[in-house]
Image 1: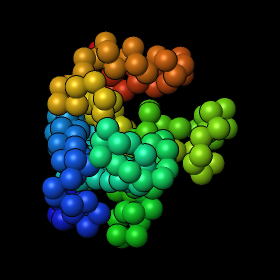
Image 2 (image 1 turned 60 degrees about the vertical axis):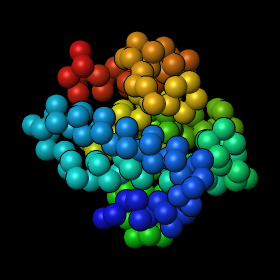
Image 3 (image 1 turned 135 degrees about the horizontal axis):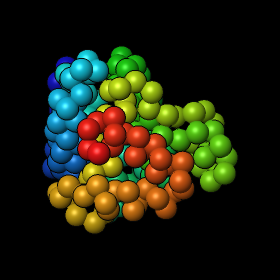
Image 4 (image 1 turned 90 degrees about the vertical axis):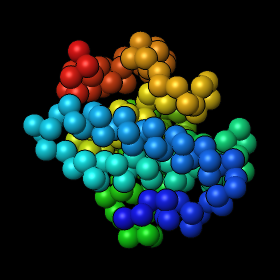
Length: 181
Protein backbone atom coordinates (compact mmCIF):
# COMPACT_ATOMS: atom_id res chain seq x y z
CA UNK A 1 0.00 0.00 0.00
CA UNK A 2 1.30 3.46 -0.91
CA UNK A 3 -0.28 5.69 1.75
CA UNK A 4 1.11 8.91 0.25
CA UNK A 5 -0.45 8.05 -3.10
CA UNK A 6 -3.81 7.54 -1.36
CA UNK A 7 -3.46 10.87 0.47
CA UNK A 8 -2.58 12.62 -2.79
CA UNK A 9 -5.89 11.49 -4.33
CA UNK A 10 -7.57 13.88 -1.87
CA UNK A 11 -4.90 16.52 -1.10
CA UNK A 12 -2.68 18.66 -3.33
CA UNK A 13 0.97 18.50 -2.31
CA UNK A 14 1.37 22.28 -2.13
CA UNK A 15 -1.45 22.87 0.37
CA UNK A 16 -1.21 23.59 4.08
CA UNK A 17 -3.58 20.67 4.75
CA UNK A 18 -1.38 18.19 2.88
CA UNK A 19 1.79 19.33 4.63
CA UNK A 20 0.16 19.24 8.04
CA UNK A 21 -1.48 15.86 7.42
CA UNK A 22 1.67 14.14 6.17
CA UNK A 23 3.88 15.55 8.98
CA UNK A 24 1.35 14.70 11.69
CA UNK A 25 0.65 11.25 10.26
CA UNK A 26 4.35 10.36 10.01
CA UNK A 27 4.83 11.27 13.68
CA UNK A 28 1.78 9.26 14.74
CA UNK A 29 2.82 6.28 12.61
CA UNK A 30 6.35 6.35 14.08
CA UNK A 31 5.03 6.55 17.65
CA UNK A 32 2.57 3.74 16.92
CA UNK A 33 5.39 1.54 15.60
CA UNK A 34 7.40 2.25 18.76
CA UNK A 35 4.40 1.27 20.90
CA UNK A 36 3.84 -1.89 18.84
CA UNK A 37 7.50 -2.86 19.32
CA UNK A 38 6.98 -2.63 23.09
CA UNK A 39 4.17 -5.19 22.92
CA UNK A 40 5.49 -7.64 20.33
CA UNK A 41 4.22 -10.44 22.58
CA UNK A 42 0.67 -9.35 21.63
CA UNK A 43 1.49 -9.89 17.93
CA UNK A 44 0.43 -6.50 16.58
CA UNK A 45 0.43 -6.15 12.79
CA UNK A 46 3.17 -3.52 12.55
CA UNK A 47 2.86 -2.96 8.80
CA UNK A 48 -0.88 -2.35 9.19
CA UNK A 49 -0.23 -0.03 12.16
CA UNK A 50 2.16 2.06 10.08
CA UNK A 51 -0.34 2.31 7.22
CA UNK A 52 -3.27 3.10 9.52
CA UNK A 53 -1.17 5.68 11.35
CA UNK A 54 -0.50 7.40 8.04
CA UNK A 55 -4.18 7.37 7.01
CA UNK A 56 -6.04 7.92 10.30
CA UNK A 57 -6.75 11.63 9.62
CA UNK A 58 -7.44 11.45 5.88
CA UNK A 59 -10.92 12.93 6.41
CA UNK A 60 -9.81 16.29 7.83
CA UNK A 61 -10.07 18.13 4.49
CA UNK A 62 -13.86 17.73 4.65
CA UNK A 63 -14.02 19.66 7.94
CA UNK A 64 -13.86 23.31 8.97
CA UNK A 65 -10.36 23.63 10.40
CA UNK A 66 -8.80 26.67 8.69
CA UNK A 67 -5.73 26.58 10.97
CA UNK A 68 -4.98 23.20 9.34
CA UNK A 69 -5.78 24.44 5.85
CA UNK A 70 -9.10 22.57 5.82
CA UNK A 71 -12.14 24.41 4.48
CA UNK A 72 -14.85 21.76 4.38
CA UNK A 73 -18.35 22.13 5.73
CA UNK A 74 -18.41 19.61 8.59
CA UNK A 75 -17.28 20.16 12.19
CA UNK A 76 -13.85 18.70 12.97
CA UNK A 77 -15.35 15.94 15.16
CA UNK A 78 -16.66 14.42 11.89
CA UNK A 79 -13.21 13.72 10.42
CA UNK A 80 -13.09 10.19 11.83
CA UNK A 81 -16.26 8.83 10.28
CA UNK A 82 -15.59 10.82 7.08
CA UNK A 83 -12.16 9.20 6.85
CA UNK A 84 -13.82 5.84 7.34
CA UNK A 85 -16.11 6.52 4.37
CA UNK A 86 -13.14 7.52 2.19
CA UNK A 87 -11.09 4.44 3.01
CA UNK A 88 -14.07 2.10 2.65
CA UNK A 89 -14.55 3.49 -0.89
CA UNK A 90 -10.84 2.93 -1.50
CA UNK A 91 -11.27 -0.72 -0.49
CA UNK A 92 -9.48 -0.61 2.88
CA UNK A 93 -12.11 -1.53 5.49
CA UNK A 94 -9.64 -2.31 8.32
CA UNK A 95 -7.86 1.02 7.87
CA UNK A 96 -11.26 2.73 7.67
CA UNK A 97 -12.19 1.52 11.16
CA UNK A 98 -9.02 3.10 12.58
CA UNK A 99 -10.09 6.46 11.13
CA UNK A 100 -13.41 6.24 12.95
CA UNK A 101 -12.15 4.85 16.27
CA UNK A 102 -9.12 7.12 16.87
CA UNK A 103 -11.14 10.20 17.87
CA UNK A 104 -10.54 10.96 21.55
CA UNK A 105 -9.96 7.60 23.19
CA UNK A 106 -13.00 6.34 21.31
CA UNK A 107 -16.61 7.47 21.40
CA UNK A 108 -19.71 5.67 22.61
CA UNK A 109 -23.31 6.27 21.57
CA UNK A 110 -23.75 7.88 25.01
CA UNK A 111 -20.86 10.28 24.29
CA UNK A 112 -22.44 11.17 20.95
CA UNK A 113 -25.87 11.73 22.53
CA UNK A 114 -24.60 13.59 25.60
CA UNK A 115 -22.54 16.00 23.47
CA UNK A 116 -24.98 16.19 20.56
CA UNK A 117 -22.15 15.34 18.15
CA UNK A 118 -23.22 15.49 14.49
CA UNK A 119 -21.89 12.01 13.74
CA UNK A 120 -23.52 8.59 13.22
CA UNK A 121 -24.91 7.12 16.44
CA UNK A 122 -22.79 4.02 16.91
CA UNK A 123 -19.99 3.02 19.24
CA UNK A 124 -16.68 4.12 17.74
CA UNK A 125 -14.28 2.45 20.16
CA UNK A 126 -10.86 1.06 19.27
CA UNK A 127 -11.16 -2.69 19.83
CA UNK A 128 -8.21 -4.47 18.19
CA UNK A 129 -4.69 -4.00 19.49
CA UNK A 130 -3.83 -2.16 16.26
CA UNK A 131 -6.78 0.24 16.62
CA UNK A 132 -5.83 0.92 20.24
CA UNK A 133 -2.17 1.54 19.40
CA UNK A 134 -2.92 4.11 16.67
CA UNK A 135 -5.48 5.86 18.88
CA UNK A 136 -3.00 5.95 21.78
CA UNK A 137 -0.12 7.22 19.60
CA UNK A 138 -2.28 10.00 18.14
CA UNK A 139 -2.89 11.46 21.60
CA UNK A 140 0.78 12.49 21.84
CA UNK A 141 0.61 14.94 18.93
CA UNK A 142 -1.46 18.09 19.16
CA UNK A 143 -3.01 19.74 16.18
CA UNK A 144 -2.96 23.12 17.90
CA UNK A 145 -0.17 23.82 20.40
CA UNK A 146 3.07 22.57 18.85
CA UNK A 147 2.26 19.93 16.24
CA UNK A 148 5.90 18.95 15.74
CA UNK A 149 6.61 18.19 19.40
CA UNK A 150 5.56 15.03 21.20
CA UNK A 151 3.50 15.74 24.32
CA UNK A 152 4.43 14.27 27.67
CA UNK A 153 2.28 11.59 29.28
CA UNK A 154 1.40 14.15 31.97
CA UNK A 155 0.06 16.68 29.43
CA UNK A 156 -1.87 13.99 27.53
CA UNK A 157 -3.46 12.79 30.78
CA UNK A 158 -4.32 16.38 31.75
CA UNK A 159 -6.00 16.97 28.39
CA UNK A 160 -7.95 13.69 28.46
CA UNK A 161 -9.09 14.27 32.05
CA UNK A 162 -11.24 17.16 30.76
CA UNK A 163 -13.49 14.55 29.13
CA UNK A 164 -14.16 12.54 32.26
CA UNK A 165 -12.82 9.85 34.52
CA UNK A 166 -13.89 7.01 32.20
CA UNK A 167 -11.80 8.43 29.33
CA UNK A 168 -8.78 8.93 31.58
CA UNK A 169 -9.17 5.39 32.93
CA UNK A 170 -9.10 4.02 29.34
CA UNK A 171 -5.92 5.98 28.58
CA UNK A 172 -4.32 4.79 31.84
CA UNK A 173 -5.16 1.19 30.91
CA UNK A 174 -3.28 1.74 27.65
CA UNK A 175 -0.31 3.16 29.54
CA UNK A 176 -0.14 -0.09 31.51
CA UNK A 177 -0.83 -2.34 28.52
CA UNK A 178 1.85 -0.63 26.41
CA UNK A 179 4.45 -0.66 29.19
CA UNK A 180 4.55 3.02 30.11
CA UNK A 181 3.70 2.39 33.78
